[in-house]
Length: 148
Image (cartoon, rainbow, N blue to C red):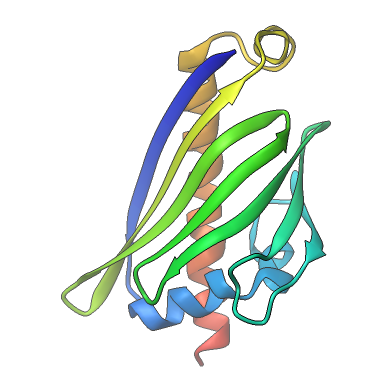
């Protein structure tokens, strides 16, 4: 198994509460993520924690479970089954009237998947970062739609 960690962030001209509302709406994630990433809700918890979904990405899939929520500050995910295993975290940090949104990923990936889907660890990180730029665009757009 290979370990990969990525860390991407962007300052959005939104309040933390606006972005947190989008991140907390798991049923709406397919509306703002790029089309090549799809989410299938497996279990939805009214408190958020314990919610589970399957992530479908380019022929790969993995399962994620929301382990912990820090209100208006962070969402901690465990990736337990499938192609990627490890942790993912969305963090929110107020910056004046805006919010810095950070997505950190720390996963292990089976070596076969690297050969089939990525050239190297550097390629993995670069692809995730390119995807996250589009994810941040979608998140910003969705936060604006919900808060008009």
